[in-house]
Image: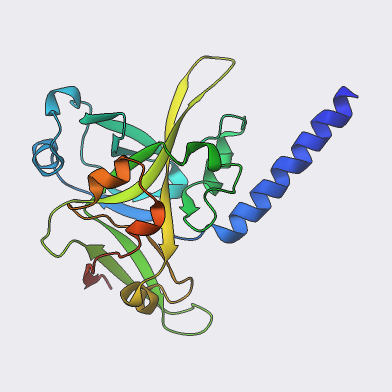
Length: 229
């Protein structure tokens, strides 16, 4: 009976993996170059609690990089968290490959995310990269960097969960970027998937952390476009 239960669990997790690999698209590459003092001024936190932060440059989600985050429960300090949320029931570190992004349309339904929708965070970036397909198969692409119009660091909406390794007791603080259907600007740039991260502005960052209805954050501001190649 125990073996049957284990096999059932494995099949169930494989089903979740397949579903999330298929439907979780965007955003997988960001950039962080701002120094600690600049982030502290922009996001109003105390830098003395965040001395372990260092600018990381390009962050590729599938390497599970550590990135600067502000959590809803500790808004006065910067946390360094790993890109890729680990649900409490997962025991496979590679599962994070499938939780880099969370679709806002289904975040309340997915087993990987639904327990953590109120664990809000701000993911601090200078911008993110996206590739525009120049032909129907994506053999030719144009790389864009999307930054804030004022050149300042900005926040992407996220959720997080501190996963505990039951064998070692180690904690992995992981987050997922929340994505939405692309606006007009990103539909033109990210034309293969028509997705984008929920980019917040100064006026609604605190409302996101407060746990407001996610649908009220879909009026995403225009970003500065820079062609990289």
